[in-house]
Image (cartoon, rainbow, N blue to C red):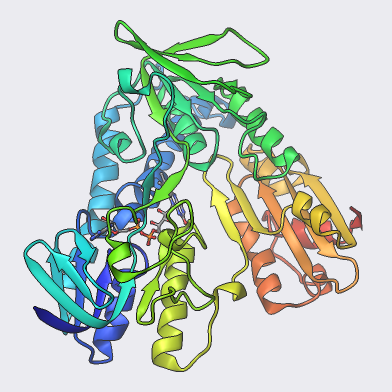
Length: 457
Ligand SMILES: Cc1cc2nc3c(=O)[nH]c(=O)nc-3n(C[C@H](O)[C@H](O)[C@H](O)COP(=O)(O)OP(=O)(O)OC[C@H]3O[C@@H](n4cnc5c(N)ncnc54)[C@H](O)[C@@H]3O)c2cc1C
């Protein structure tokens, strides 16, 4: 039995930083990782996908070279091996960086293996038993593979196995028209594949407002991505080397034949094989660990951080979980999950930057609100860059004048959204930003203008 002050299970976006703070405070820390140091974001999520998105963007821009007066000889083609090699180099650097950081950290011992609880204070890793007064769970999630007729007859890819693809699939079928699926769909179309997105709901990313879903659908359709929406009964089958997806949609043929299949139907937490029952840690029906506003589970001395607690599904929310726990335990600074404002981006090109409530959420809560919207075609920076697709919109509370939410679907939307987000965190009235003088020409400079055009929602 090895005794520690703290055990951290998983090296995602919260665990390593928490190990750094605890070990730095002189505590004896054990960190357990069963697979890849750095977890999803570094190895199979944000970093590699955004690296691939950058390669896809280069191919897209090269095809559009003539629009900018640039001459290219011959057709544009993509070397998928080099695309993958670039991705591997960049993601590999981060993975190695996390591993080295943890393995050279004073007061920290790294265990490579799968952790299982045996009691409230004990965890087994292989033949070792570790004991600590405090245990922090940062086990993340994985692609959800739900039962689907015929799935057992076909081979399929997930976000993890997509990382090994170094060839161009002739026709990629993407089941799932949400954040993960759409990023892969657009990048593979730009690499040169035929791509069909199959989505059960009547619209893409149905958590967003209808105009956002429609805007994204238009951008993707314009690039030649086939969209099969309202595919209520998806059935899969093998036909020779091909994979056939039966789709009962309102439009189009009843089946789509592709060469490869990517499942992007959501994520599930890695909590099913952790032995949580031995510690008495409670989860909800989908396996997410139940936590309070400071990320404490129902068992004193056990915390859950990151995607596995269902309070966030992003790198920044997992990292913020670390900040909350560290502030409460080490700094005497009371920080809470409920202080967090929802914010995220979809990395299609152009991207979608989002902060706060959607318009439909605002209507649901019934707050009197004002809103404004502007097409990116009316934003100088977008026109100059030749990237005029999309729009930006904002909503404010009619009484308090606080910003309730915003969406920027357009060039630079993932960056420009932060000026809205910061005013929301400052709890300042929108008039503060309306009177701010932003730099010309930027996408952000139109936000004060937009705030001068508010009308009842
Ligand atoms: C394709 C894709 C793209 C994404 N892009 C973005 C993006 O652009 N921006 C963004 O903010 N988010 C993005 N995300 C989400 C983001 O990757 C996650 O929210 C983020 O990684 C937070 O994860 P985490 O800290 O909860 O744990 P993870 O990063 O999932 O890490 C958990 C770690 O725990 C380990 N582990 C699990 N069980 C055990 C066990 N029993 N014993 C020991 N170790 C264990 C795992 O091996 C893993 O290393 C993306 C996700 C995907 C799938």
